[in-house]
Image (cartoon, rainbow, N blue to C red; front, side, top):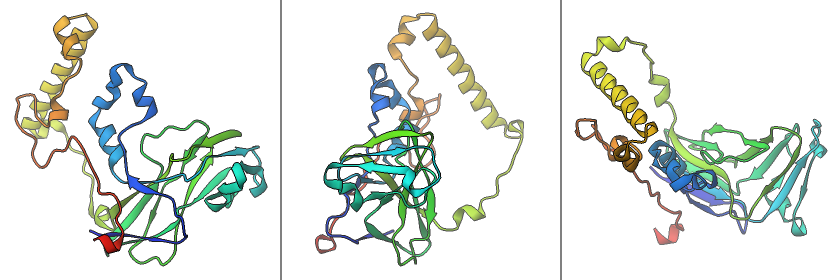
Length: 246
């Protein structure tokens, strides 16, 4: 599946593969938040578009466009951030026209698990297989105040998603007891998990030394069987290249 990025300005923002690092995850003792594989994989699943220069935005709580104000050196923010939709919304110019293959849309939102006090990224699904215009990335203040974006800080994450596959998904609620093998495995995991946590809390040196159960990270069941399908514990996406280099 191809993703083509057409710059719409001389110096568009940088696009780079998503990175696993998050400041709040770094702050944990031994950075143990990174042991949660679903978190780190989500952090890397897509491409970041990053802020080209630092700026601050402030909202006084009012509904008008003028109630959001900006400050940056030389007013450089005017090239990529503005108040366009009122009611505390900050709008970023992504700087590109994106085109996906037929059958693929673009998920557009904030970087997963990127926590920013006072402002929340909004999320959209854009039909980039045919749309001949660029989209914007928007954040909304959660309360009156001031926020800062640093140079190199991601303001947007993009990820191609199937256009209609989810429409064919029909969720079914079913009693776990109807799947005896799965029920037995689930109960075994729950028992193992409870016992492990109890041992850690009781100061068991062996459990404390192990720190965490690594079965999911390793892609194995409690019995040591390999996961069905392709298990990944690290994701490295390709960086965008110029068409002349492809």
